[in-house]
Length: 153
Image 1: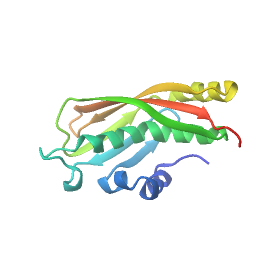
Image 2: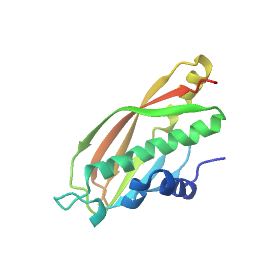
Image 3: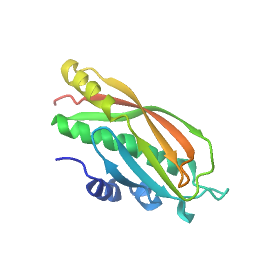
């Protein structure tokens, strides 16, 4: 069953409530790309009247994680996924509606195929870029995902 934006947003209500209450929503997803939006509001602001960096991180991670979940599900195998590292750059105050996009879905299949074939864990770096309503980059996040075939018990 393919991951859809509406199914994933329902999932986030129950499994990622902090992201859901902060307004993080998956808008689009396919095999190569995902898009998440979040609007600067009182509940997700910092003392400087812009979006708190951790809320931006949740939105950015969701763009990469949703792609991972979708492609893991498509394998039919039990595969664990975990963020091992991340880094971020903040270039402008995040106010208004921020749209995060990850276009690194093409990197996932090779890592999943390798971990299924070899049984060894694999890592990939994925990037998510957040832009404001004027099209200006406000932040860029990189996440190192690890995938590993779950061991049978």
